[in-house]
Image 1: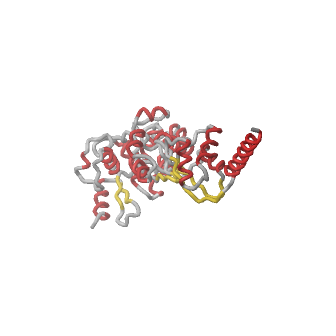
Image 2: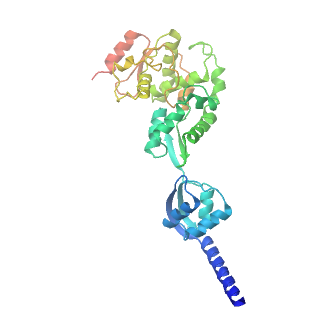
Image 3: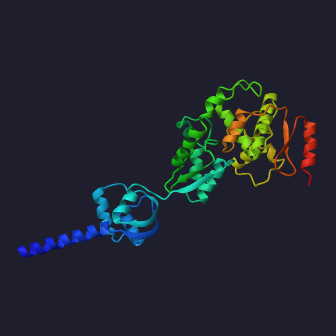
Length: 332
């Protein structure tokens, strides 16, 4: 009996030593592994063993059960020397592979949604449903009917686990750090010479988005701002094509070309039909566009047309001069 017990103890000790050796033994890896959402600890262990990341799924499973941490889904990159313990800790800490997701100046929420789906980060419909929900906007203490204009141009480090909410919070974090500091400056500025005594920060955001869509030439932005303010102050309609395009896109009715018939679309965003600003921004915008709102040029310009070399715009004070500029610059 003593001999049997001794043999059993030696066997258990050998297994323990061997298991410890396997758990802590490092191996060279160059692997990328997807841990799906909802996978159990044992399912994760099976995936890791199948991918050759760990030597034994049962040892990983037992170690996971002993330490009892939540194993997080996502894409994990293993490059270098790793033991089973290292693998477990990496997944338990959620050290997923991060990728860059870029919003460029002029992207609107629909553009962002399409990019997210194309890059297999999030379904377009899920993102759109969240960001066009007015109640969600209010939850973050913001104004507007959507998050349009609140997601700054930037390259964001994101992972495969992102939801519409987590992405929104990442985008808003940059907005609060870089853009919100201008709120006090704008709302304390006297705009009497340009439009009316005071404008809200949200109105400035809307104007900045219009500027962003109207020109890519940095030095022109204060001039575009002056035209917008001059038209607003005089009671003229803004007649800005991108607002119509935005209205059409919201109705999934834009085919890439703007027609005269399109300018009749019934939408609060249509600045050919409605005076004043559209109800929300129409895209993300760069800080230079917002700064153009803070420091617009003081001019008598009411019109502009794209120059024939397409490197900027030709500005004019009168409609007659504008027609002449149109004729000269839009020749075939």
